[in-house]
Length: 88
Image (cartoon, rainbow, N blue to C red; front, side, top):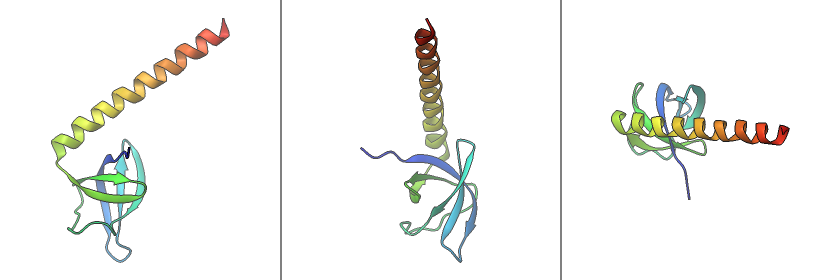
């Protein structure tokens, strides 16, 4: 199964065909080589292994990011609980 993460376009470098993305607070550069349509600052895209795969509407992106945040928090809680159990 592949996982593509919604990311917001922060800047576009047309000379290198790349975009700087904000993915859950982390900035990273991604290739636009697989995109057939133009990408603009402020749009949301799906990022997979360093490549922008497609655009995604803002509402769907924000919904997905909320779910990812909930998953991360649940995983952190589980890790904390396991660490506490291992201390006992």
